Image (cartoon, rainbow, N blue to C red; front, side, top):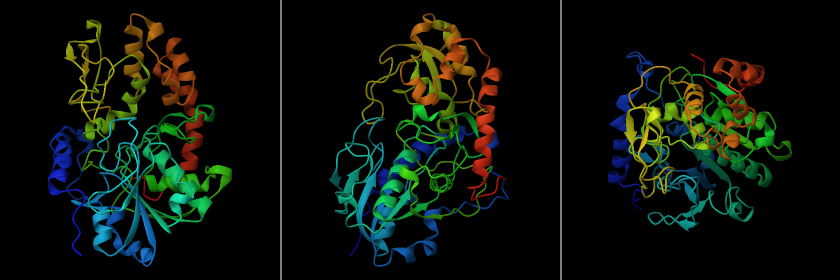
Amino acid sequence: MQIKPIFSSAVLLLFLTCCGQETSNNTAESDPSPTEKTIVLGAANFDEYLPALKQKNVAVVVNQTSIIGSTHLVDTLLSRGVNLVKIFSPEHGFRGEAADGEKVDYTADQETGVSLVSLYGKTRKPTREMLEDVDVIIFDIQDVGARFYTYISTMHYIMEACAEYDKKFIVLDRPNPNGDYVDGPVLDLKFRTFVGMHQIPIVHGLTVGELAEMINGEGWLENGARCDLTVIKCREYHHQKPYSLPIRTSPNLPNDQAARLYPTLCLFEGTAMSIGRGTPFPFQAIGYPNEIYGSFTFTPKSIEGVSKYPKLENERCFGVDLRDKKDNLKFSLSYLIDFYHKFPEKEKFFIKSFTRLAGNDKLQQQIIAGLSEEEIRQTWEEDLNRYKEIRKKYLLYPEN
């Protein structure tokens, strides 16, 4: 039987172009050495996981990033005779076309006929009924290394279901574009939500495979359970090795620059400021309708499938353009502190979601109290150092 690709070449070209043309804005620190060997993704190491799929009913947790070269993992598995019975999709849907927070309905994939189940709708954890016809679940999604990116929360719930219903879980690992460092406050479990489920810092410095090992090893699944976990490692990867994303990971992270700025700028989602949603450069600008913030201007517009009703829609914002910023792209509080102090009505700067993103209620209080970035960093240093020691136990790749 000839398999018709679930993503046409035109669709994949669109995704690749959206990233490929703009990734020329990568920082100088991200330029790979000409002597570096090409990274081989976990999904491309077929001999390490295809034998485990023989005569098994297989489900996958995938989206538009689940590609090997220019071929989607679903197409690859079907072409190799794997009995694929179910596709689970995370936030943004199977093809990454749903806007942030937009619920996705259950359906069947039109091209393959495989059952398609959303884990970002009514259900976020697979039920017993959903897994009755499944033996093995494969997770293959590109992450960006920030605690509030919800793909790792979806992975947690999949692992929990695998432990509960005795299913094998395989992670096809991918590099972390922010995997070269660890930073930010560690989550206070009182603020545990879908945008922060684990006691990890904002920048956790792990691949999804390493994080899965940590979740399992530290007993973070419900009732301290452990799932039957296998991680298929990448080859030729280490944590200081730059990785340019071949395809956008979600509608509002269109390129490497946005992914690199994401840990810093996502905190602004819990403020009155815009970070460029509704423009061609989301997560690459900061602004507000007040000229005190700078000479750069942009006007957020509603974009179907990308940013529906973005913050400050149709209002001209003034601020800073970070598209060409080349240095110091690691996590920073400097913009947040500066924009707060300039904000005319300070009681309106923070909104309810800020504490969920920060993972505590201290950061907001510290900024309001006028603490410097250095002073704030000192308050999370002990927790961060403790996390770094735990992290060492689960590293699958060298630090450099």
